Amino acid sequence: MKTIADLAAADDGRGLANKRLFIRVDFNVPLDKKTGKITDDARIREALPTIRFAMEKGAKVILASHMGRPKPGKHEGLSLEVCGDRLAELTGWEVHVPDDCIGDAAKKVIMDLRPNQVCLLENLRFHPEEEANDEGFARQLAELCDVYVDDAFGCVHRAHASVHALPLLVRDRAAGMLLERELKALGKVVHNPEKPYVAILGGAKVSDKIDVVEALLGVVDALCIGGAMANTFLAAQGKKMQKSLVEEDKLPLARTIMEKAQSRGVKLVLPVDVICAEGIDAQAGTVVAAGAVPEGQMALDIGPKTVDLIKNELFKAKTVFWNGPMGLFETRAFSAGTLDVARALAKIDGFTVVGGGDSAAAVKVAGEDVLKGIDHISTGGGASLELIEGKKLPGVAALEGA
Image 1 (cartoon, rainbow, N blue to C red):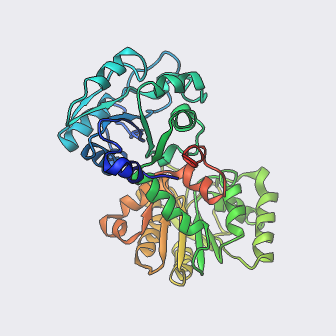
Image 2 (spheres, helix red, strand yellow; image 1 turned 45 degrees about the vertical axis):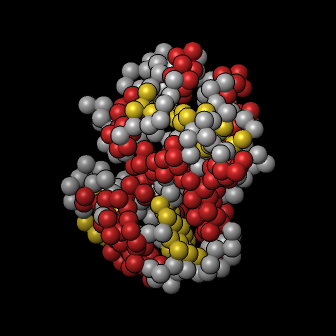
Image 3 (cartoon, rainbow, N blue to C red; image 1 turned 135 degrees about the vertical axis):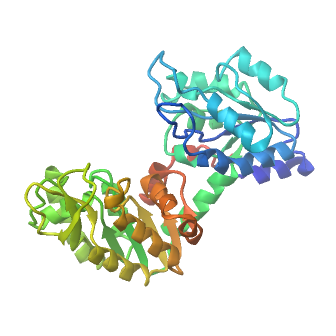
């Protein structure tokens, strides 16, 4: 798989000069529901190195992204103009956003681009053909460019037109710097990870993580489980979880996973204590043993003894992968387990990866020192999990063999 640096080095270093370069970025940033303003511009900032590199090499830069999940014909509040404004603020470039991502308006903006100007195409998902991986739509996008670069790691697990069909139509195609960095970092926890290897999984449901659990049981030395998904495992052990979120239909699966862990010599760390309350709106909780949740209450975080058990595994580890919060970390009363694990992760000497999504958000909440202490924080939760599972990612496959 080529990189954008490889493309730039072609033809004695003139490989990108005056070329129309289509960069698939992930500008699907969170917006304030009331004001429509960006609440976290990290995805835009992460794309800047690749965009700057392309600009410095003299390319005519065309950026493309999706935003949200627009319904057919309903585009209000999902225009990428807000991202264009933020990109201009961050860089000082003139950012032009045509009223569509295909057609004459987009072609004219691209044709007229001058130095220090960028074209940001309008939301790709305004066309349902994007998610359908429609080749006809991809051909219309291909008319806009000479070269294709994918720098949207958070989207490479989706077989969508701008991610899969389009690059297959462009001869010169490559990975951007962010995508390259993601694949290298996650490759370290997939291919021959240094041992001991510890994985921490959290989040709401066992059903969301079945494939990743199966994959990890084949490589890790210890698997620590927290979050609401741990409730299902505790219930499978016969513990009464009262009002806690439990996937009743997954109890047999949880038992099978516990048996597999034992047979493969994988240490399975489940909560021995939890913080519980009457509901998710509670402002305080009580620490109880994992099997002693009071009637009418629910487990909403792991307890301090469980945090210590996880720390014991972390401080022995040479490689750690973490995906999913340990509790309802958005509420202060139930954030301690997640934040304590994040702080411990930042202190260890081993190679540490946080697999995007809510766990990445939790690390940011934990503070700048924690952010600096973790080797890699992925920009794609779903993509990182599918890579860990050993699945072929359509967006990566489309770049191979270019």
